Each structure stands twice: as structure tokens, then as C-alpha cells.
Image 1 (cartoon, rainbow, N blue to C red):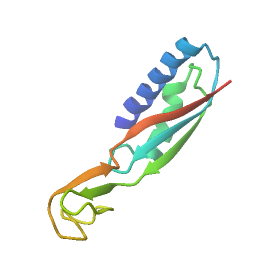
Image 2: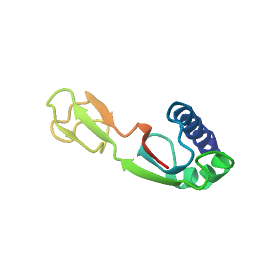
Image 3: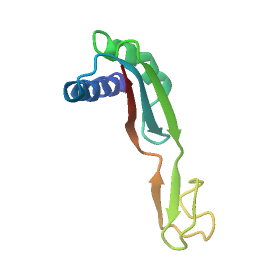
Image 4: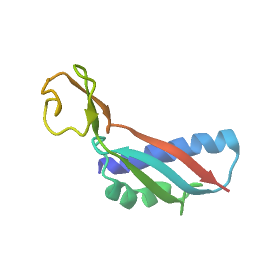
Length: 111
């Protein structure tokens, strides 16, 4: 059910932009969803039509782009997929997540 709240927040973003830009209808909404964001794209697609009902986004296509998780070793600088709690190159435990937690509206196509 967390995705319903996420869908409602997307609609709030759309409504704020609608007031600023004066468009009447949203054709599509492009999202970037990190694999560690906690948002399940399939569930969001299921709940979005409920949240969009009666708004400019009703009937809009929801397009999601997955952002894979990546880490950077703060010891050797190597970057890559997180495989364990240490660097896969040098074995250091000093790694930082650099992508995969993001969730945002990339663009809105309007009419």
C-alpha cells in the first residue's frame, strides 16, 4: 500500500506543475526508480490509476526507468554493483552507495 502514497505524491507534483504551466492533460510521466528505493514499479503501476482519477494525469502512461544499485570504494575508488559489504576489488569495507536509492519524476509530457 506504500505505493498508493507514492502515486498520490506523484499526482501532487503534477498538480503543482499544472498550476504553474497551465496544461490540461498529462500524456506520460517518466520516473527513475532506484532498485533500493523501496518502490515496486509493478505495484506503483497498479495504484497510479486510482490516484490519478479525476486529475489531469488520468489516463497518462507511467514510464519507469530502473536505476541499478552501485557503490564506490572510498579506499581504491573502484565502482560497481554491490556484491557484499566490502569492495570487490581491494576488499576494503569502506564503501559508499552512489546510486540505487533515487526515486523522482524525470519528465512530464503534457498536451
